[in-house]
Length: 199
Image (cartoon, rainbow, N blue to C red; front, side, top):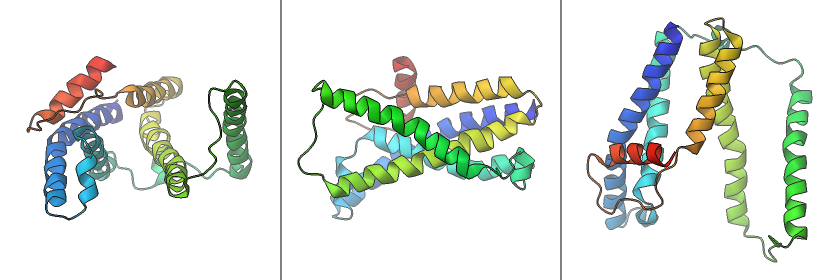
């Protein structure tokens, strides 16, 4: 139960620190853009910086969480090398690619979408990089660290369900479509309240 309490404190701290850090990131980016350094930063709204601030807080607080949880290696999280990892990776790839291709085929056949005549390669590269890196980070965090800590309580199915619910909630929490025009120290906390309200 101690690990569950530590995880709860960790997530609360992430949100609070992210809310406090977001205005600083936003103001810094605006200052740099105004002085000709990274001018492309000016196009990003506050919500973008809020999400990045939460990620920064999650990374910064991860090491203290692992330290107080006495995690020194993968074995402390109950993680072992998978002897059938090639088979499992191939099965996972097929289970994700086949439905995607079927849906794509149906969307094109039903004239919901159509093929582009020109492929924008730089944009495609960004999408491909995100499609590979984001799942690796999310799976390592949620199903590696968080689930590993919860499984140390000895309750397998409640731990799996809790992590799945948390994973779903995180993906459905979304801020409003309109970002605030004036950013203050409390804008991060307003973003949290609005995300919960939208959810």
